[in-house]
Image (cartoon, rainbow, N blue to C red; front, side, top):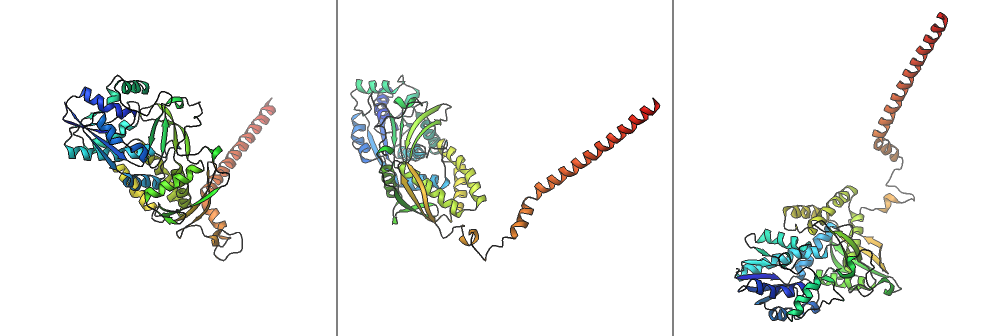
Amino acid sequence: MYRTIVLAYSGGLDTSIIVPWLKENYGGSRIVCVAADIGQGSEELAGVREKALASGADECHIEDLRDEFAESFIFPTLRAGAIYNRKYLLGTSMARPLIARRMVEIARQVGADALAHGCTGKGNDQVRFELTFAAFAPDLPVIAPWREWSIRSREDAIAYAEARGIPIVATRAKIYSRDANLWHLSHEGGILEDPNSAPPDDLLMLTRPVTQAPDTPESVVIGFEKGTPVSVNGKTMGAVDLIAALNKIGGKHGVGVVDLVEDRMVGMKSRGIYETPGGAILYAAHSELEQLVLDRKTLAAKDLIAPRYADLVYEGRWWTTEREAYDAFVNVTQERITGTVTMRLYKGSINVIGRESIHALYDERFVTFGEDDVYKQSDAAGFIRLYGLSQRVRALKDLERDAAADAAQASADAADNVAARRAMAVA
């Protein structure tokens, strides 16, 4: 039996029933809950400590991790251009290593001898939490109730809570599993488990349906310094405020909603709806600024790293040398990614309408169709001749080979004709 168990706690359905379950199955253990404020909003955090204590927890720590989440997790992932399964901006994935590390820090403070989480045995979060535990607390055992108890569904979990008088928000009618933070809001479960079913009209919470978005487009100017967003419409902001401002602007115009059938780590596919309005704007703007500043070979190299970085984040391998190495590469590519990008938002769409940087490789003097004094067009002939040299050599070799084959065939035909005439003469 364990003296003290530190539990990742959100106050949602799963963790609400885990506290009494731990008390019932690990009797005598002290339960210390850790709730992380990563920007999910005051409403979700309201009463979390009281709820944890009322359900049987001995302590509940609420940790404000918003700044670190934005600056040390969201922005590095954005700078890397990491997108999983072509669409997912990794909102849940990025948060888990941060929460799990803070859990370990508190576990050390309170002298805990076990860690616990409410992740299901089918999901990705169990991997993300436990890889972080392995990196920072390899000596502490991990309790994962979903892999031990007889509860097999969210309906079972609701029944468990009702039987013990545990207050919960989830209902059988709206049984979605949601995860909210500063970056996004995800929706899974219920009718969404059928990939051929349209999301209900009342599902979205951060983002307006495009049918309700304004009929007038809105332009927003994003300022970057070394690849990191620093301003919106000319106003310098901290990371948390900047993301919140863009979530509000983007949500109003219905941008950043993704309906994704994704590949989980455990091998199955699952369907989720992700709302990332501010993130969608930032990814689009950052990509446009890179396109303006980076040379094509560096951009191509970075595009090779991006999906690997996305896999790393999705799979919970944040605390690895691999991620540090990718960050070192990305940081070099971002040294000149400073400037502004103007995006136009309209009924779910995000379009670039302007970009500017003192490091831009675009120079009108070189690309103009008008008269210029900096580019000698006749030089292009020599460039093309050298650039296509390998193709010319191959073509010449083919011509020589074909000519030799034709000559050989002609010689053979001539020999056949001579032989035929001789045969006729003899006859």
